[in-house]
Structure formats: C-alpha cells, structure tokens
Image (cartoon, rainbow, N blue to C red; front, side, top):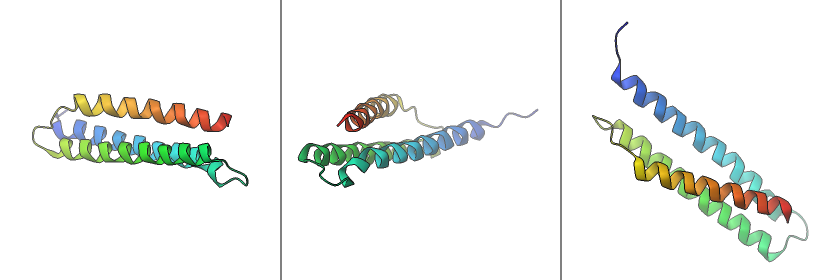
Length: 100
C-alpha cells in the first residue's frame, strides 16, 4: 500500500466544504423567522447577525482550503479556533432566534 500525502489534505478540504454547507443550512434556518409576518426589529437584527457569522464562516473555510493547497499544507491553528468560535456563535444565535 503506497502512501499518498495529498489524500489527507484533500479529505480535510472536503470536510471544510461539508462544514460550510451545513453552516449555510443553519444560517438559512436562523434567518427564517425574519420572514414571518409581524417579525420584530430584534428578529431582523438577529437574522442579520446570523448571516454575518455565516459569511465569516465561509470566508474562513475558503482561506483554509487555500492553505491546504500549499506544499506542504500550512497549519491552520488560528483558523480552526476562529471557525469554532464562529460556529458556536451561530448555534447560540440560531437557538435564540428559535426562542423568539
């Protein structure tokens, strides 16, 4: 069995893509209450914040994927930590929107 060092980076890149896709679904669900009749100002602000967090997540995922294209792939410690913090923020905001 031969070792393929590029396969690890490719799997990681695909994992970042899947995570970005799931973040897109969460962000769209988090903005859904803003389209309900009688949605208040706080709902609109929370939906806007959810979309801003989503844009940050997608931007970081794109940056990390580009870092994986380098030879050798660059470590992404700060990117991963920031991505985790934004994901937690999006989850909390989504939960708050559901409760509104």
